[in-house]
Image (cartoon, rainbow over all chains, first blue to last red; front, top):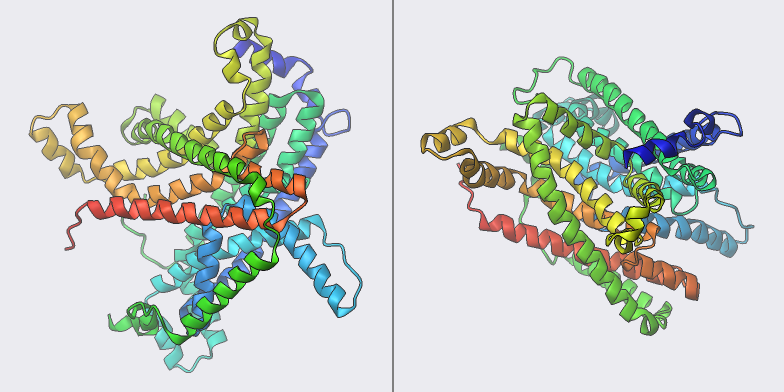
Length: 250
Length: 268
């Protein structure tokens, strides 16, 4: 088993295969990796925007808005991401073009990355809504009331009190979501978008060095996860400044 | 409780039939009826047998991978809590790698990578496992099992560590040996603590099963993809698929809530 494993690594030298210039496929992998990061960041940002709106809507909105948001978060979280991505990936460009047609404008071409960001971001939004709602509820509500009593308008209240106060509670959940978003970009391989996983599969399929390339891609994903964890730890430390350390945290 | 006046609206008893809810339900019903009437469902007659077989395969994969994954997760969690470093470090590394890479990549690594290694060995080609490793589903089951084990291993680490040491000491004081202590005290309490998280992980696992369709296992998702290819009907199979997964998720949540309800909880 191990013999042939190393044999298959050594068949054409691993470094030759992973070289960044065309005979090697390293350049393609790096390009896919950058695409993945871009989509992941975009989807996470969109999800965060939807999440902020959703969380505030769920807590302070009227009954209709609250129920609609409940339906949104429940449905999205009950359906596999892959199915949602396919639905949104096909439906959104189609709907936009039908809308433009009826309005009398010409059709537009929705780019792959854009559709991917919208699809993943829409899914992320449902999870982010729940994370942020929980974080806002974890803030001692007297602080928010005090802000209101000082006559702050809702925007200033959100900017000066709610956001900074909820951040330490939200960061663990949001960190998780960021990693889910980044790993979720792999699903776009199924709809044919050239992110890391699909680039890897193409390289592996062409050279037949499956282990080399999938391992290399795994290392790239893992590297970004580990680096993210370190950075998130710093951000969390910063967001918790001035607070007592939680006793049961490790 | 006086602090929580701003969220009092959330805590009010769940009024099932406010007027606006009736309107929303009516709108929902109208949408569903419109979908049933105006969209194309004529393909259902040809494919429903295939769909039921696919549904059964999805559920079967879910159950098998969850059971095996959980069994594998117990030593992973335990090793990280009490194991010596030569056990706990590999366990931690395994969980980190599994949780740090996309499941799709893991599935493809096993299917294409491992699958391309086996044919090189004559003795495998001649042995009894050859028909097995030529099919796709063993790789799907293996990948999903390892993935579940990685995620749940991390959950069980926290659960094992969270059982109060007094409980274990009490068990030891009763003269229980290690195995009995684990079986009667440590494991049940850890599972009890982790049950809500385990429910979430199981739902996640259900939502991961469609990925096996990418390596030619014909599960429910693969059936809908085939309908799309054969009939060029895009949205209807996907919508029905989404509905089916919603029902399955609801079922899982309900089952876990029943299990949780069986465990008596003392409210202090």
